Amino acid sequence: MNIILASNSPRRKEILQKAGYKFEVIPSLYDENIQGLKYSAEIVINCACNKAFEVAKKNRKSLVIGADTVVVHKNRILGKPQNKIEAFEMLKTLSNDTHFVASAICLIHGMEIVKGIELTNVTFRELSDTDIMTYIKTRHPLDKAGSYGVQDEGFDFAINIEGNLDNVIGFPMKLFDELLSECI
Image (cartoon, rainbow, N blue to C red; front, side, top):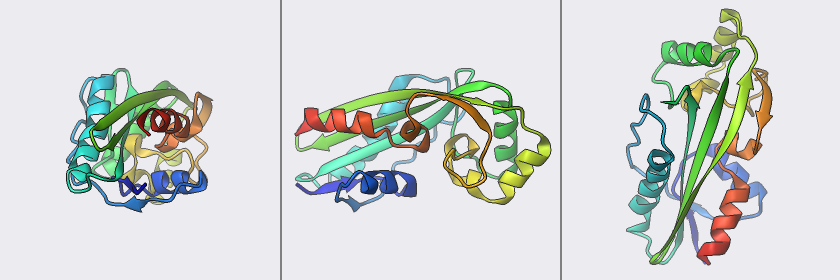
């Protein structure tokens, strides 16, 4: 079976490759502007499904994987920052507090559609302005939801993670394997 990852995320690609999956990458062009919205699982699942649908309509015989990851603080979605100032503000908001990461996956194979979501709590230590600026200078936060990547070299902001680390990175393998078993 031909598998397509409808995402350009290097993190999702790496997680799937490490798990031994062979797939093709066809990034979805779906515009997922949900930053600042009040969180609901439905919003994140819909984004993952819309990404998958956008690629599946041209690849009907393939298994298409759509995914979306958001950081949620005080019930507000923090997407990818638009610039360094926004990244700074997001990280300052997450400092010395707990938030959660929600990753949704949608699989489309022919007429079969399965979807799900996973949540992981993350607690940050107190961050100084210097901590945040040093991290922003690495440019790592500029392409990640919530302005951080827990897997980034030198990232030591998280003091507690309750749940699946792959979920925080952007692709929960356990959820993917469960959905895949339902789909094929």
